[in-house]
Length: 469
Image (cartoon, rainbow, N blue to C red; front, side, top):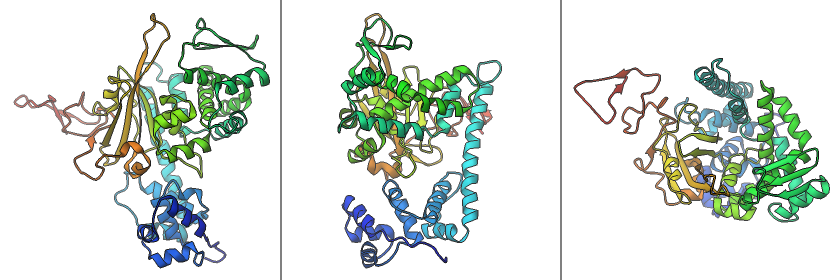
């Protein structure tokens, strides 16, 4: 194509290869080219062609998007992501995707946009379905449901707040990975004129805006106290930025808007304590070892897991994780998925999922290789947690958190070590929930799928007393 910019990226290719500990022959084999050809690319004697850009993006999804690429390369990558939907069968070779992007760019752009609209429509249909079948009479979503869905549609990443928190964190942390309690207290007192009181008489955190008094319960773990300070600091220092996001959300009720403001303050507090670039870089170096990350950033296990699920910044994405929190009754009280796995919107999650066992076994990490009915496989880590109440009169909170990714990212996830990812029998067959799971032979099924007619044979009894068409 006339006027098309040629891309020479020898230094980036060499850095990528050395970072991954690959020989030229190894990387050449992954890219389907000869070692001499790779040598010429690394010496900038030859430019990268669209097919190679696509292969690099496919082989190194977390490294290559950070390198320079043209519009055609990005379009080919977007095509690949859209065509990875289980709706489509089989894979299209990288060179064909590159040719589609080059020869029919307008058609490719509209296909990508159409698929994105299809996904959004499906998500909204689930939301309306949930509202219509909920217990509330008018079928409208409750405030917390509306806010939960807003975060889901935002892909759990709010760019202006994340960047503002990262900038503020840079000023506070003084070369450390994360601002410590002293830095947060100092900024609250000196920059925002807030007086701090540590007392267990006013809940976990109470702020008096007229007097400028912030009261924090000292009975909380240190990382929880620190998060409460960060929440209030974000609420005050970045109030205008957070308010602008709330006003643009167009939520139905005042309660929804208030709840979104509080949720965005929590989001911004996490971004303040775990600033994006520093946290993303460290997470990759540690292969997403949650305990090590929590030690370095002074955060709790749950806070660290949650932050990993928000790393969705354009041009600097983290591993696409799903994250959830499940209580003792099996209720999913937090959830987000940057993967193709979607959580149950009705009732509990699949009983075969390891997170339910983790609730009963606190402070122990369980790992599972699971396969959903669409054939996708996920590496899942779950840990049971106990959050102390600070008093004998209040029971501690017991729950589990889970974090996982698709197996194509298993090399970046330390919890996948030791799992037999290639075996056809090593994966646990899970579903989203019994309500929509099509598996006919599951011994753990609680009730039949809602879209199938049940079949009862009075002369035959299995573990489940019915079959379905």
